Image (tube, rainbow, N blue to C red; front, side):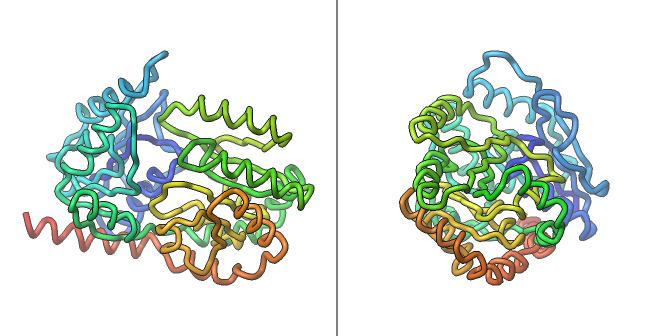
Length: 361
């Protein structure tokens, strides 16, 4: 089967991580897989090495100084559409709204449902839901959002998790010791400073936590994004100054260093307001790190009894303190849960779906 997986970027975001891992699992299962992506800012490859069995088509997408979000979205769609060759593939599977608009006739994975105010992005998001002829969601909660909002029935295929990679990082004493010597005892979140990640709530929670558990630092990793969150970052910095706290903002962390950074954390905080699965949080469980996440239906579905839940900053502070005081209570459950998800199983489910769609057509 000739399969095209399309992504809007080569940089480390959850959807891109998903695209590469799924592509590699499909290729390992004997399929002919090509990943198409926009190479933003001069990128000529992905943020990590990719299995050579996967074909890569990186479409150049140079930056334009002063370009707004709306025009950048439209240019992204047109650039990928002009380069993409749909006739070369039996299945075209888009992983985000930009690539779904570029591919037009495709299968679409809806990782989560967003609500945008930028007109071009809102229209892109809507078209990318209603135009694909088949849909995949990584959780039943998101599939229910599609059913309730658009009358769309989506196949539910959970993410896989590279659990072994993060479990082994927890055993690498030298690597985890390096992070702890540099950062001390820390609460970690991965995803950057942006509204959907709930970073301002985490800042408030950390200020409360620090009052009762001194010496614990807040570390924020990641943050590669297509959008302009400078206003949110300004609010974040201003509030941090008002609270008298100084989070450590690492930005994007090298792919090889991320597992040990996660494994060395004392708590992984996941205060996202909108998620489809929570891959970064599942990786933390694989590393044996206690997880505190937001009280959302999708996260209850995915993490169940393997995480602590909170609805607001005060609750996050309470649950983070509990996790710091009793890190062993959910560790075994978390590791077992993370190990139950595999990209091989996800690939099998995708292939079953692809075959049904081809038979139907």
